[in-house]
Length: 121
Image (cartoon, rainbow, N blue to C red; front, side, top):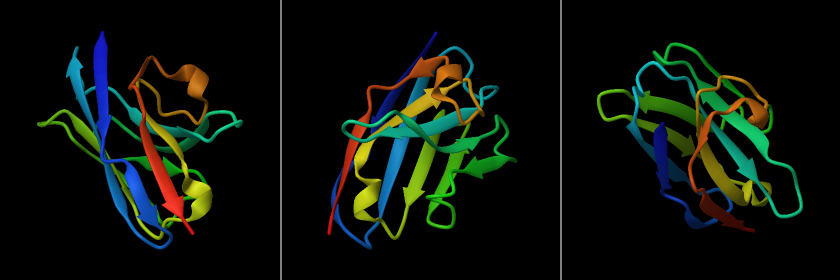
């Protein structure tokens, strides 16, 4: 079992930045790939970014490539999502997921409760 707690969401103006954190506890974090997904009202949950267990490999949705950076600190059992040049279309609830490197949310094994990100234009 893995427990995930996200933080760092909030309200920001377009062009601004936010850094999301996801603290993990429970079974071994350091051997699990991790991912971020997001869900806007009325839309399906969509992939944002993923990182391998070692942090050596990452991949991103085309919509965030070049603006968002996923990273992890295995010693602190935390994964991060640095979001720069935010746009109004980035507004969503952001979820941390454990156990997947896939773009499909259906492959995730564990989920956090989500953190709201609102970008005002």
